[in-house]
Image (tube, rainbow, N blue to C red):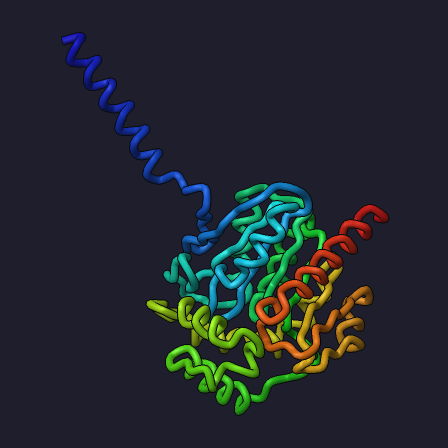
Length: 292
C-alpha cells in the first residue's frame, strides 16, 4: 500500500510539473492584456535597450539589418504586433492603444528600463501609445518616416481612398505599385522582401488597423503626444516635408533628421545613413538623461 501511495504521489508531482511546463510562456513570447500571443526576438547586451516596432502589413524581419548591427553594442528587441508575423490574431479591437499594450507587455515581461522605442510608419503611433503606458521605462522615441504633419486631418474620402489603395497593395503587389514610393534602391531585393513578408499572411485585422491608424491621427495623436515625457526624434525621408514647427508645439525638444532621395522604408534604401542617425539619436537620449 505504501508503494502504491508513493507511486501515486510521484504521478501527481509529475503531472503538476508537466502542466506548469505547458502553460509557462516561452522566453520569446508575451501574452498581451487581451490574451493575444506576442512574439519577439531578443539579441545582444548593453544599455539602453532598443525596441524596434514594424509598420502596417510587415513584421519584425523588416528590421533584420538593424538588429544585426545594433545588437553588437546594445540589447535589441524586435516585436511582431498582433496580427502580423508570428504573433496571434485573436483580437477584437485593432486599435493603436492595443498595439501599444502589446509592446508594453513585452517590456514589462523582460523588465526593461532605459528603453529607446523605434517605430516605423504605423509603428510610430504604436510607440507613442507604448510610452504612455510605461513612461518610467522609456528614454526616448524614434519615429521613422511617419507623422510628418501631426496637424493634418484625413477626410473620410481620403481614408476610403487610402484604404482601397493599401489593401490592393498587399493583396496584389507589383513592382510598379511599390517602386519609387516604398523603396527607390535595390528594387529587386526590396520587392522580394515585401513578397516574403506578405506570403501566407492571413491579413486578419489588417483593414481594421489601417482605418484605426487614420482615426488615431485625426483624433488621438496630439492628445497622446502631450502625455509623452521622453524626447522624440524623427528620421524621415524627404518625400513628404516634415512640419517640425507643428510637432514642437507639443514636444518642444523635437528634432527631425532627413535622409534625401529614399523611399518610405528609409532603412532599406540607406541603411548606413539610417544606422548613423539612429546611433546619433541614441547618444542624444543618453546625454539628455545624464543631465536630468
